[in-house]
Image (cartoon, rainbow, N blue to C red):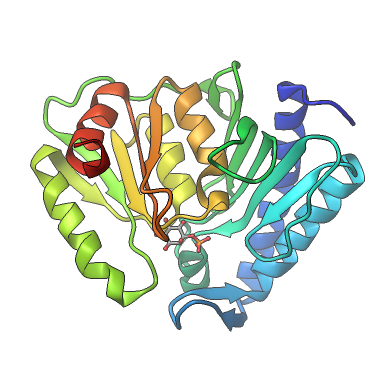
Amino acid sequence: MTGDNELELVGLAAEIAREAGELARQRRREGVHLAATKTTLADIVTDADREVEALIRSRLADARPDDGFLGEESDAEVGRSGITWVVDPIDGTVNYAAGIPAYNVSIAAVRGTADPETWDTLAGAVFAPALGELFTAARGHGAWLDETRLQVTTDTPAGALLATGFGYDPSTHDGDIATVRRVMPIARDLRRMGAAALDLAYVAAGRLDGYFERGLKPWDFAAGALLVREAGGAVSRFDTATPRPMIIAGGLSVHARLLEILDTETR
Ligand code: LIP
């Protein structure tokens, strides 16, 4: 398969995400083995993370050998086709290791290199195997949960149901808690699910009104951001020159409120 047809790309992403998700679930049933820790003791990678990414990478190379690749667990590769795949093999790794079902495979196809400042996302798939839900989006063709079209929420009369996340570095927690404190006046309640791609998918599905988090990696949000935009929402990133950029996502009114509260750069 060649070219950058969004519908072909999302079909491939969905097919591979399903296969990879089933492998992750199988390995979870067999028992998860810690492979290593990364930035801190809390930042773990399992044997399954590595095995699932290897499967995804192999399937993509077979189908589209000229494409580039950026994954959480293996070396980046610049392609020749102008398309790059941005992959989180198991997003929600800590949940996965703990047996919490809120984990997913996130696969996105972007035009350009794996730089979120310049890429153009064409297709994305987020598959949560333990929950049996496949979220997909192709640019210009809407966002979907299986066969149901998704739409972000438009008003929050009881306050916004928001989600966020925290990094693995304890030294960042005070600042993140201070951010939560600034946001709570517009919130109905707050969720911390531990899987960014699911947070974004749930914003697209209208299950959450908005989401914000500092420090995500490109593979955490590449597919989920397209889901939100294709479901009629907005996604912004700022502080992108810092080690911990902020991402915010939501329906247009909640996105605007979060931007007003959090984007001190524009004040
Ligand atoms: C995780 C994100 C989550 C964030 C965690 C971690 P991982 O990704 O999905 O939102 O709060 O710190 O980055 O490491 O499970 O792929």
